[in-house]
Length: 176
Image (cartoon, rainbow, N blue to C red; front, side, top):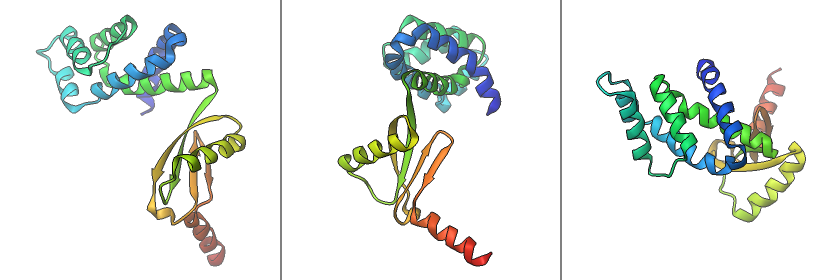
């Protein structure tokens, strides 16, 4: 996927420079466009040689069901014209990373064996923000294999205090 990332980077950076003040709003419509561009039927339509690039862009913008500003329309037009609509999800991902970096926010995933209530997740978020030294936007994912404890992934950093990880460490120690 390095190729997609390389292709998407200039588009994401240009869009972010243009919409920096409206980056929060842009994340909404950009994610919707990316989801529709990633749809199998949309990809088939985009690769159909009998359909013009303008028609593909018009269908995508019409199907998404959200109000897209002129900057977004221009982006879709350029991507459709260059046959790069498949890069739109990666552009959205890189745009989100740029917006998060600008606001000092990092996205993280908390893997838990059991569902945490809102209060526990808020308390956990506060302690993890101190641990990772940045503001976090956490998403919870259930993973029954953990048995207990949590596993937190923020960027390329991992904090694993799960029972599964401790058992694996004990196994390595005992077999060494």
